[in-house]
Amino acid sequence: MGAGRKALPGLVQELVYTVDHKKLGMMYLGSGLVFFMLAGIMAVAIRVQLAVPNNHFLNPSAFNQFFTMHGTTMVFLVGMPLILGLANYLVPIMIGTRDMAFPRLNAFGFWIFLFSGFLLYFSYLGGSGVYGIGSAPDVGWFAYSPLTAKAFSKGHSTDYWTLSLLAGGIGSIATAINLIATIFCLRCRGMTLNRMPLFVWLNAVVAFLIILAMPPLSACQIMLCLDRYLGAKFFDTQAGGSAILWQHFFWIFGHPEVYILILPAFAIISEVIPVFSRKPIFGYPIMVMASVMIAFISLGVWAHHMFTVGMSSVSNTFFSASTFVIAVPTGIKIFNWIGTMYGGKLRMELPLLFSIAFLFQFLIAGLTGVMLATTPFDWQLNDSYFVVAHFHYVLVGGLLFSIFAAFYYWYPKMIGRMLDGAMGRWHFWLFLVGFHLTFFPQHIMGILGMPRRIYSYPADRGWEIGNLLSSIGVIFQATGILIFLINLLYSYYRGRRAGDDPWDAWTLEWATTSPPAEYNFEKLPEVHSARPLWDLKHPDEPDWKHN
Image (cartoon, rainbow, N blue to C red; front, side):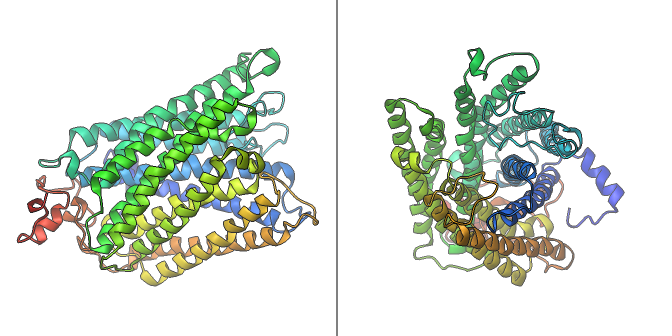
């Protein structure tokens, strides 16, 4: 891509027809960044509205639409394409093969994802309902029943939301099947399961998780369509249905979805930390086992989102305990990352800076997660801003920081040029300060009783300073993101040439050219250990002698 520099019409034609995993990966990443900017603009608008009491920057309906579209976009149109884009681009190269197992299915997965995004945003034009033009979905990103019933959600905006997620789910499952087939059938000679990079291992785990978690979401979307248009009563309590049924279906998908998004973050960190610590990952087999355990346990904790709906004490106890248990393998991972850095020769480059910030923030997210898993505590703070803070510490402090680490680490491989370091450091510090300024006060506001999804608030609740700090923090974050985007464009044309292996790394993607040739490798590699490039660079002390 980076070396091509083709005229725009030729480039567009090439991208439309391509089945190459690298180009599709780049298209996922580019699309995810575009949707990220849209979601970011909405986040800024939401925080401007809440910066001061009794504000009227947005009207109530626009506010409801913005937080619905922001949440839906960030989860389904930013998080998913960014992680699938990285997996698409990197997995085949890391296992030493030329492409995904099913290239056309791969292209199908991308285009149906993009279609789902367009369908969601087309609601701004086609979703005319009680508000007329501009009637985007306004039912929250989890669209609780009965709010989505025809009686409370007139017009077609909710239908666009439903059909968009249904289409996106099909695309995600197609890509997951492709990843599993690629990883287990196309590894190069010598790439046994215990020699696979952790990035590949964790993406395999995520692919299985997608196949298990997405169907319940698709099922409840179909049931909602049947309710709204064919008179079915799945979620209509007055006709014998159950509103709680929606919550069960949604969170059976929704909680594993958090791990579908965060396990790839673990995968990125597990590649970055060893390279910049100049040490192999500490406890490779334990890291793999912990990932499988996290995925398995995540399937059985969904109802901790539902402690306040009136489940039995036995159910509350089970889901509370299972949520505590998931902290064990997660803690093992944090311990192993720290163990990898301990005694290492740390190179404080930007990928490692973002990774260290990830560790700190994910630790806070984990601690507040354990607090919310305690049923009495959750009863007090459910649907408060404390939950908003916890959720953003997981997905922004965890996923987004690791995505930035990935961009700084693999951009040289994808484009052939280094990202500018000075702009990168401005991006890091502005975003880090802005992130904590935005979301840490929200813990306190939640404890003080501020509910989530609130449009405005009076001046006598003690929430003024926290909200003002939170809104100022968004300005820092937005400035950091703007510098990051400028850096991507600037470095594409003016960045320093990267060479094939600028970080002196160990996995196979660094054995090919930057950017990689069309079929990745002139000759398919053969590996003898988990660090094949180390073996080549140090023939007197190869890894395989010690394994």
